Length: 317
Image (cartoon, rainbow, N blue to C red):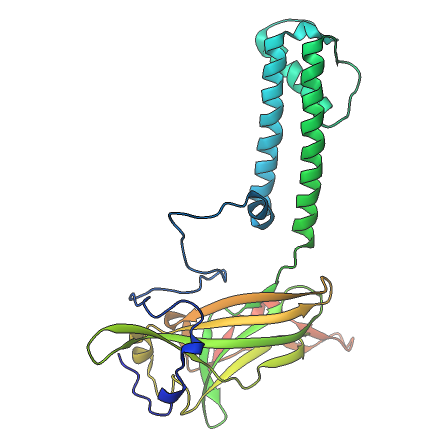
């Protein structure tokens, strides 16, 4: 469906394109995934960066990989010790092959971690050489694990929470597009700024489809601090691409509003970023957000911010 808003035609600029181009015109193609990442899957040639992957992956997957590496490396060294003969390890009596392997694995673990209880020790050249390799790999692995743990803990991450839905709500004498954010942490975020870009699929006069981008003007683009929640409001006036659009028209246009938030985190002393997007099926029409904060009923003088209410809306009467 073509955009026929004459007030907006001169404001659709190439500079509004966020880098996605104009060829993504599928019926339900989404540019930004719900987790804020690009909804793009790379195939063919790609660059592998194990260090970056280990820093950015989830904690659960990280610890599974660390445990698999720890068990696997020591199993390899235990196999090498079993092959040269467990009689080369003082304090280990030869027995069944599985028992020998288990004892050799524990010896490898003690050497790998530099614990060295003294109950087992190498007694020949081959076992001493393997023990030296175990110690070298253990020291390098400890240094790498320390660096990875520090990088993961020191990495600035956004804990901004976005409302699940955006709303089309009354605003002054008209309507507005709104969503809201809040900070899950007690840390202070300062100098927050937000950019909204609306994307939609337009139909050219020749019948071909093209994706368009347009920057949305906001009631307020910056706040100095975020102690509570922030309702981000785009007034739908005659300069807006949503002006006089019905829910059916918005759905036909395959609308997606892309959000980029930038803020300074005082704990990390670094700038953090957060992305999100709202597609037309995530718009709720004719409602407003339920207030999230209120005075402490106990009379402490504090303001209570109820994070569980961030998605709550009420109908407009």
